[in-house]
Image 1 (tube, rainbow over the protein chains, first blue to last red):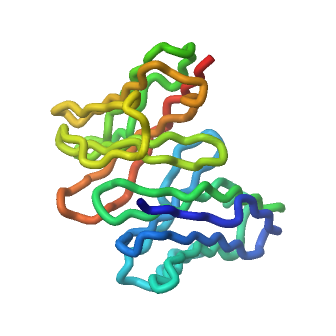
Image 2: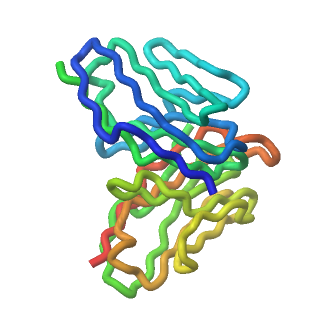
Length: 111
Length: 116
């Protein structure tokens, strides 16, 4: 089955700096790669996603890049703010709604 | 519209007991999936139901089971509870159109199970 690895597990940045989280996947048939943000005690929520026919997608301060050949994708957050502090999960899926999630990155933005 | 609702939110059980968790999806969503969330393991896929049929199943023992009703509401059951079953169980709903690649999951707030 699919295996998704996520790094780093923890990340601290100064407010205004950029943050990058990286994920690799093993199944070349995976074609949908979402990123979820989970604030403490709350439910995970989708922040951005990318499909395999696209190499990059951007939404304001958040961007995701996908390298199908290398089977890795990354989340980029620019101009970080304290409210960006949360746990971020990457995931991969190829069909239906069976998602394989990474183990999460706890991001702390220091004011 | 109302989000995904899970009940109960918290529960404590002892080893050997069984538990049933309930999930009401967003109106119009036909796919319901369940995930187990534990510290350090992230979210692990349990199973997915679409139109009352189990469409996908993760790598969990047979003690974990589920079902979906005609109104798309879903339940999952864990029998013969073990200490390692302590976790947050998240339900997620999506449109889940048959034959269409995956789309956004809308998660509930979860049911936190503690096994003593």
